[in-house]
Image (cartoon, rainbow, N blue to C red; front, side):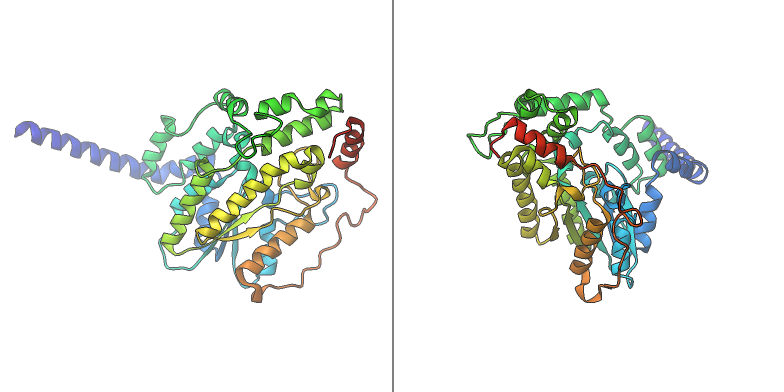
Length: 374
């Protein structure tokens, strides 16, 4: 009995010591660590607290075309113009993905305020390039602070590296392993290339001695889009959990599927690459519509000339497209309240003579030289 009492006394002392240390750390050190290790955390707290509509996104929200855009307004800023009667708050950062958005919801306020949550879906973020990004350890370190656990416990997790801290070399190994082993013939048995590695090793542009820009562009499109989504994909699991959380909390959830550069993918590889892109877009749309999640499908239909990045497949659009995306979201939220008096100056004003170098000019020239069948 005495031994038990001693154990309980020591446990009690340890608990009191932890409480005291947690109190001191919370008051004197925690805010500094948040600023150092989790720069977005305070933005999340503010957005969730004050926003009627919360927009979660990545660089697609804020990127703009330095060559041609007169306006640098983000998608969420255009959305605020269209819905002036509601407070729009955005949490966006380069390289963010549904796994981080899911963890952000740990900070969702426990109140009765009705909010709408808009989650950006970036198809590429589900593929091996993003799943095994060298930035993921940094992202997960940041996400340690997306929690309501005692601050001192978060600091202990940080010190002990108690998060997914796989280094860049390990991530690169996993990425290469996926490209080497994942079959591309799940969708169609007669597909010309067995794996991503097989495809980019036989890149017709490399074999024809195309310019470096075209070779790298073709490799990048293969690596970013040649995969098939299923319910085992980690990002799909994250989106499922977000949907379940919002249903439980009675939050209006809208998934927004971003446009991908289908135009250049088709010019590069004809029907082959877009078969994967179209299948993945259909998988996302059908899955979440069946779950009852509101979904805005802006995936198809953009000319490649509307993309800021001409040589790499990112979701960075000019102001005209950002504005159109914002309008599609505003109409989905409440078409009757959309404020339609936005008349921005035309792109590239007042310097219309400045032209952005476009990839399609060189691409078309080399497609003719290579004599591709598409």
